[in-house]
Length: 191
Image 1 (cartoon, rainbow, N blue to C red):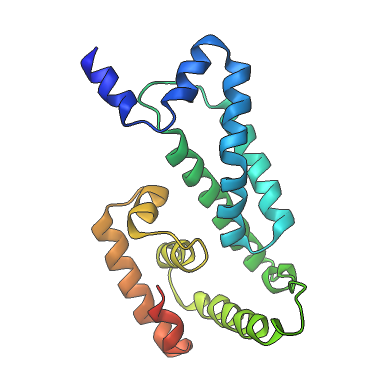
Image 2 (cartoon, helix red, strand yellow):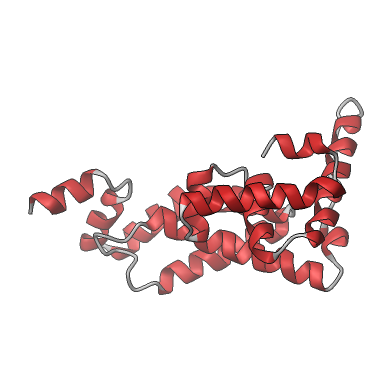
């Protein structure tokens, strides 16, 4: 019993699980309210398309509804949602790249004239990174996308991709080395 209390104390979603024991509908509504915006932001950071990010969020939440372990005491809801979101995003980016549609899918944000030069530079840098990503392996690409576009910490990347922290660090280092000849080195310092 003490172990269960300790587990719940360390579980940011313990309140949802407790509520689910009384009313799964209310718990589900609260889960959606808590995580929907986070999922959209996470997806947007990877796919760079608001409509696609919302579609992915909807898909993630539908998968969560079907996840049998969701309300189990030892199930980490937030980590699972981040991992599923990242995987769906990476699949979409990969599929769009395969079809040659990734650049067509990126939309220029509407900005005030004063912000336009910075946005053009950011778009050019993103395009350079997307082009350079073709020079790295899929494993290295996944780590780079999580770091550059997901803006995740090493620990978060390890959790999302289900890797050891040391593996994330070495893959990121090797991926940067593979990218160096293809992009401005200043772009790699931020990762």
